[in-house]
Image 1 (cartoon, rainbow, N blue to C red):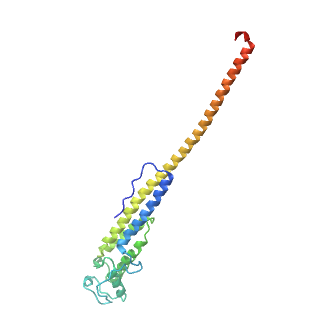
Image 2 (spheres, one colour):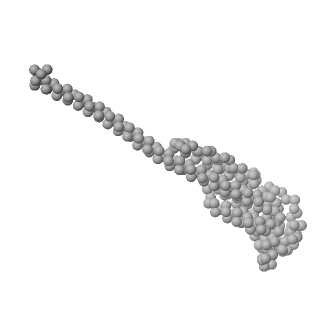
Image 3 (cartoon, rainbow, N blue to C red):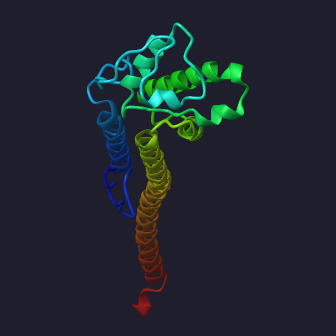
Length: 237
């Protein structure tokens, strides 16, 4: 389950925005790890899709297990021992039916079946390597591949669920990042305006001081003028 991201206040300063961006990235990374942790656990990525230990008997060319008896071809390739180990180690365990291959040319059946097993194996192996900042097309391409694998009998519900969770996380994180970037932009604009206001206050203070000085000079001139008038007309005093 994806964590609830924080509700953002309407106003943030530059430091707060940077801090929230950092926290958001940490939340993304932690959630991303949890998405695949539930799927592959602590198993090494280079194992055959995890630590599922199969109880199915390993087969070779010409031999089949019960569920393989309905396949539209007979196994002849010598690499089926390896292919069967990949199928048996898939998580969840896979029992593809390959029914759509009946519409293909018979000579292509076995090769296409092997290709589908390898595709499923390679896809799941690549999932933990998907990064949160990767293009969404990578996830959508994997989802499209799952449609084809599902048509051939592969159980892809768990894989699809994890990919959709990752899409949801990318979408939500992207929305918050856009909001945070807009807040950061507005916070910067607010900071610029506040600096302009502070500068205007300083200039206003200087103007007030000049006005006070001018007023003092005006009064002094008036007093001097009155004194000069008194000296010219002492009888009027």
